[in-house]
Length: 249
Image 1 (tube, helix red, strand yellow):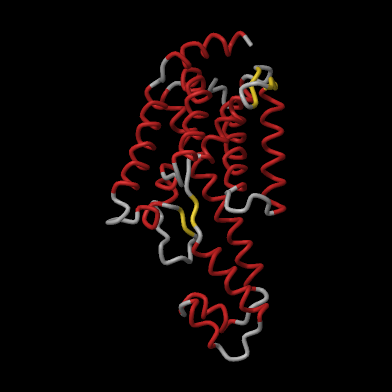
Image 2 (image 1 turned 90 degrees about the vertical axis):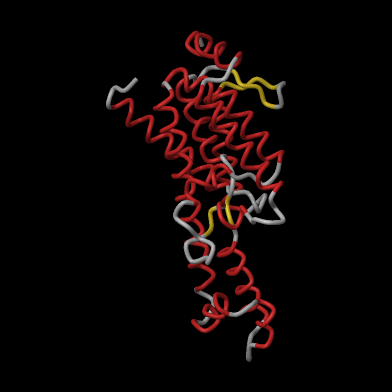
């Protein structure tokens, strides 16, 4: 508890440089996306797409972390980054904190694509090679003209198209990595759910992790990258374990 107090007061009164600049960059990305939305589709360029999508680019493993769906999405991520990340940056220093942030974010993207790959394989398993090819080469509005296409096959083609062309945005993978790190460094510090319910950090992390796993497996709250959140936590866990083994801190 005393360790958190030592670093926490400084973090909450002002933002250390990496946290401050990350927040500024994220805000600028959302502002630019909204200002230029009629001229440039930044989501198509910078969001993370599946590897077989025509919109996929290797830079998206980094750029997707700075894109957000809307102001609320940005606000929650940046609030967590400020509240918890400020403490971690002062504990670790700017370089190590930025490394952690980037690795957990990229790791979250990799996990998200791995899960997408498994979903794609599952859906393609019920389609013929010709139907799979049609998903990638024929416009969806033309599918009803395919001879012998059943409703089940059509639904599977729609699902495959949506999965392949869906995208992931947001700093949530890194933020969940930060949450995991905070719980490991300050396990008995109280965090407040809805600013009212006190929960020790270690239990807060556990509850969030189990909830994300449940939502991801069951498909509850579809449209949220639950496995990317878990990926950030997993990569964060192994990074901290590695640093501790090496005696970095």
